[in-house]
Amino acid sequence: MTENQPEETPEQEGDGQSLNPLQVIGSVFAAGLGVQSSKNRERDFKQGRAGIFIAAGIVFTLIFIGTVYTVVQLVLENAGN
Image 1 (cartoon, helix red, strand yellow):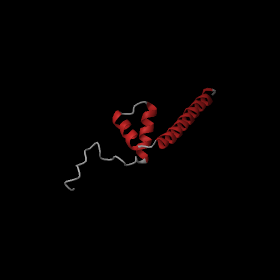
Image 2 (image 1 turned 60 degrees about the horizontal axis):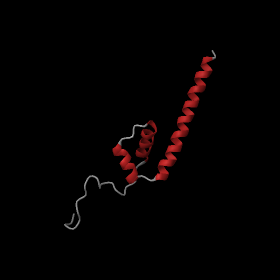
Image 3 (image 1 turned 135 degrees about the vertical axis):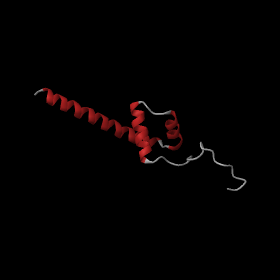
Image 4 (image 1 turned 90 degrees about the horizontal axis):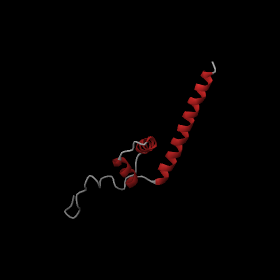
């Protein structure tokens, strides 16, 4: 490191880096359940792109609706027996 360049602080590390797919999935899942931490939310706003989170949110919502629908159908099918 040269004398002219300031040392990076932990808050600056990772600026400009995009989130990996696992981080996006984890953030969308946590936000969907309402348990997203402030630290991760701030990281998402600094490093993430809105389009990725919108697409992941739509996919998460469709999977959630499909899961609830499937569980309800299974319960109703077994309730008739």
